[in-house]
Length: 447
Image (cartoon, rainbow, N blue to C red; front, side, top):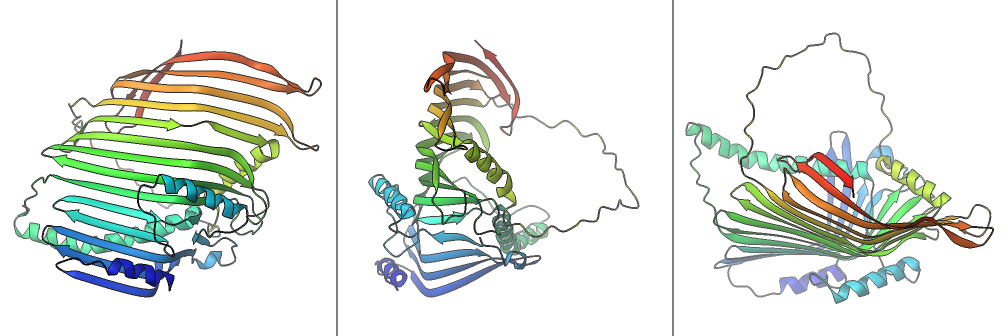
């Protein structure tokens, strides 16, 4: 009911021209792969609005609740099958963390958050070639099970390819009928596109074993926003991608998510901005700027070993039962000798680049809690990290500045003693990137 009432507010907007509105109370979706159902999505409260006017078009979608679940028969007994669930408020520690994130996000929101009772709000508008899209999500918890998520994405992409095959196939038939020459003209049009995605509070869970309710897990909570924009004028195109996360924390669950979580990484903030300049389809300049606030981590031996075990096992969490593959060698082996190919033409345009990365500091504290109260062992700090690169991508040059210090705890004196005295480190960096942006060569010299 809350989703339907909130959707009504969108559908009541008056817009001249064509106006199409639809409302559904419940919607069930099933993604099927080659071996059967992969994932199911139950959507409650759906509102859709589409309207057109001279020189303008608008569309809006509102969802009240979405539950995504792993639907594979082989994982029917797994304790973790719900991959996307709402993050509801409460009086416990989890609810207090949610209230804190929502309070911070409300003061600096990229887009207006969904109305009460809604989980997702999507708005799209096209005004004379200036297109904009905004996606706002209510607090959500994601069980990051890589294999079922990958299977769901594969099934979804297969559905998209099926639709594209219908329309693209018709176009190819037309091209073949005209002797291989397309009759469609593709003039470059000036315009703008901006996309904004805001998640004021999100929780990502990495589990070690999805079949166990008391499995160990890493829980990451943050508020995040992403903006993407393109602007085309003649042959010039500018693409800007920026992302930011605030109050990002990481906690460790030693015996299931119902137990008390132990915070291992204190709240931090991160931001990144990437700008690219194109001439037609050719990239000729890009700039990257990234900033990370102080990273403060406190771990015991057991925490460190548990975190490493979870990170190692998480990519296989929720996977299907292992199927023995036929390892018998083939009867015949065919060897093909490739004919020599003509050398590929390398782009002659020089691509310039600029990269600035800053880290305010990072502090790691190791403690020993195996024999009673936690006893500090090591305190290491890296501060003032600044990296700057300039020049052509085939010959980038720059420097890295940082200061390092570390101290160890002496239990006999009950005090810290210097392990690594404070020192400043300066490194000269040279590197080269290929046309695809991959690192080819690099050289680091400590000054």
